[in-house]
Amino acid sequence: MDENGNIDASLLPGDVDDAKMVSMYKYMLLTRALDAKILSLQRQGRAATYAPSLGEEAVHIGAAFAMRKQDFFVPNFRQHGMYIVRGFPLDRFVLYWKGVEEGDAIPKGFNGLSVSVPVSTQIPHGAGIAYAFKYRKQDAAVLTFVGDGGTSEGDFYEALNFAGVFKLPLITIIENNQWAISQPRSRQTAAKTLAQKGIAAGISCVQVDGNDMLAVYKAVRDAIANAKNGPTLIEAVTYRLSMHTTSDDPTKYRTDADVAAWQKKDPVARVKAYLAGKKQWDDAMEQKTAEEQQKQIDDAVAKAEAFKPDPRSMFENVYSFMPEVLKQEEDAAESANFWR
Ligand SMILES: Cc1ncc(C[n+]2csc(CCOP(=O)(O)OP(=O)(O)O)c2C)c(N)n1
Ligand SMILES: [Mg+2]
Image (spheres, rainbow, N blue to C red):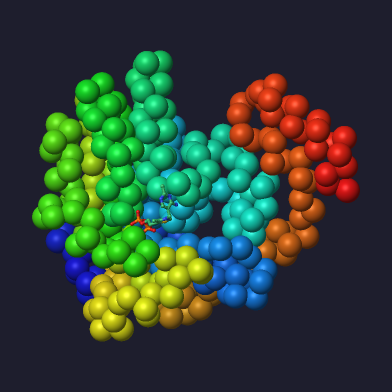
C-alpha cells in the first residue's frame, strides 16, 4: 500500500478482507488515541516517563494481526499496539506507564513479556523462549522487537546467531524508526540495510515498508509459516514522529522538514484513504469510533487512577516462584515497616 492508500492487489494477502482491514484500522486509531492520552497525562504529572508510538502503528498492528494466539510476544518498550490487539487490559497498560509495579504483571494467558527497557536484552530472552518451544515440539513462534539502535548491541548478534544455529522459531522485527534518541540511523552502521545483518547469521531476512500495515502483516505471516524451519529477521522501515520519550526534546537534533516529509507517509492516513476509497469508512464512522474509544480510554484511566498500589508487588511477578533471597528482602522490608 502506497502513501495514498493504493494497493497492488496482486500482493494482497488472501486472508485480508475489508472487514479485517476495518478492524485493523480501528486498532490503529485506538493505539494512537491512547498514546496521545498517556502523553497528556505525563505532561500533567499523572504518568511517568513515556515512550510514544506515534507513526509506528503499522508495525505493531500489522504484526499483531499476523500472529496466532499461541505465538509469543517479546517487546522492547514501544510496541503499544501489540499489547492492545493482544488483549492486554487498557487500565493495566495505563498503570504500567504511571510507574505502578502491578501494571507490569502479565495477565494469565497473555502470551508475552512485559516492557524491557535495557536495550536489546529482550532478544536473547526471545531466543530462549523459542528454544523452549522447539524443545517441547510446540507449534508456536516468538516475535521479538528491537530498535535500529538496538541492532548495535552484542545481545542482538548473540541471539540471532543462536537462533540461526539451532533453527529456532524466532522472528525478530527491527523497528527502524530512524533514531536512537538523538543518534540517527546513519550512525548505527555503515551497512546499507539493517535487514542484511541476518545474512551473517545465516537466517532469512527481509526489509519492508514499516508504514505499510499490509507489508508488515505479510512479512510476519510468511515468517510464522516458515518458523518451523528457522528464524527470520524483518526490518520495518518507519519513523518516530514524536519524541524518544517524554524526557527528550527532538527539536534539538532534527529538522521540522525531516519530520514533515515523514508525516506525508503516515501509516494511519493511508489505511483510511484505502478504506474510504472502497466505501468501507467515512467521517461519521470516524467520529463515532473516536467517541467510543475516548470513553474506553477514559474508563481505563479512571480505573488506573483509583488503583491502590501494594509495595509488596515489587517482590512478586519477577520469578515464577519467589527465590529465598527475595523472600528475605520482603520480610526485612515488612519488619522495618517499609511501606507504612
Ligand atoms: C543497554 C542500554 N543502553 C542504553 C540505554 C538508554 N536508552 C534507552 S532507549 C535508547 C535508544 C534506543 O534506540 P532504538 O533501539 O532505536 O529504539 P527506539 O527508542 O528508537 O524505539 C537508549 C540508548 C538503555 N535503556 N539500555
Ligand atoms: Mg530507533
